[in-house]
Image 1 (cartoon, rainbow, N blue to C red):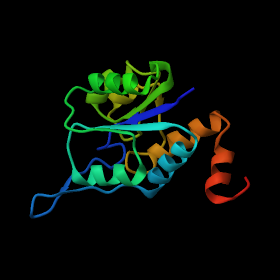
Image 2: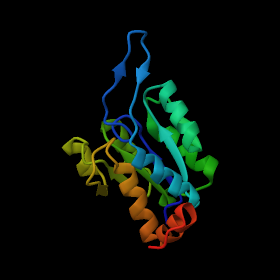
Image 3: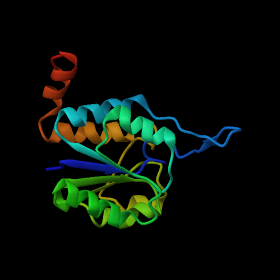
Length: 168
């Protein structure tokens, strides 16, 4: 019954490395499979939210490209952010899934209906999640989550058909 998928950015949508150029700009890489998964989630009617402890022009640009509904940056305590998003979306905790990778995400795990850690998260973080992905952060973990949610909801085939005109 997931209708809202929220996630951390660094270490979930990226591999967690932070690249800085000589001008001090922050560079990030995003996996194309995760972007396609987010497009599929939106097509299926799921809404998305990104919550990050950092701020980055690259994140804002990618979020705009993908049509992410809520983007919270420079967040030091993520529970108030996820509660704000749940209030704005009018979704109960039971309809919210959250993907995280580090200790800052664990309190959110205990606030939402489905907590997910990426495979590259530290052991203590993985132990707090209801589900751990097979894929590492920045390597398709978000797509893995979305594919499974859509398949369990019986929406995956219809979304693929709508987006690509392909029968499965």
